[in-house]
Amino acid sequence: MTVKNEKTEEKKQDDSSPGEKVSDKLPVDHVWGADMYPERKGTKLKQSWIKTMFGFAERESLDNVRCEANVYHCVKNSPIVKLMMAALKSSGCEIDIRRHISCEVCNTLVTGGYDSELNQVVICQNSAGSKGLVQAALLHEMIHMFDYCRNKLDLKNIDHLACTEIRAANIGHCSFMGSWFQGFSSPINIKATHQNCVKNKAKMSIMAVHKVKPEVAEAAIERVFTKCYNDLEPVGRRIRRNSEDMMRAYTEAYLYGYS
Image 1 (cartoon, one colour):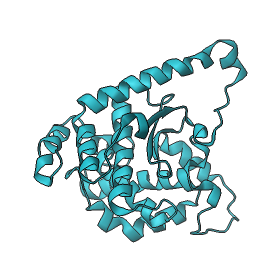
Image 2: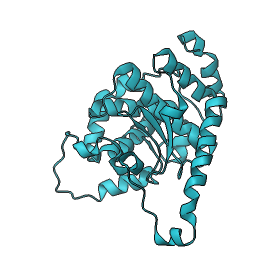
Image 3: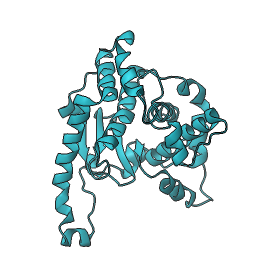
């Protein structure tokens, strides 16, 4: 899951009742998305009467067209998205963008998600409004798809979820500049602060998916962190902001059999 506003989600979790028992068991009704993706359940995200009155609700179809155009652009032009698609194909999980990528209305806290039951990447048309956001969401969610294909990812297992969220945050989100702007990094001890960014990003995603307490998410992250943090497959490197890392990873893909 690609969480848009980590601080907001963290505050919601902190405001929950302190007397509730912490449990590692994942509620069945929270296995997929914690209502972040209402269209997955055949419902629509409720529009306020103000938006309806002023015609903003009609933007939904326009947002969908824009989202699909941005997805198509990234599939054709983004080095990192093309690398992920090649890696999935080489692993026996070739993507048909009409079947495996869906633009939908989501909760505004997220920009994307991965539905393992339908094996679909969800791009949130109402919150991922630019090519850059769509590219970031595709990379993040395709890492989950890759893990599901290659490593038999089970999202009901919190350790599996923690591992794939660590990998997605590590490879695609926590560049030094990105994590610095979010308040997780500093020029002092860059490695440690980068790891803190990855842990925080993974924790927010776990809490958003399963609505577990921070302690439960943190414990799962610590159990698998070293192994999953060092696993950079299939990209082979951490993507730094405003660098040539995406193109380098793409040009090196043939070395790993991804073409």
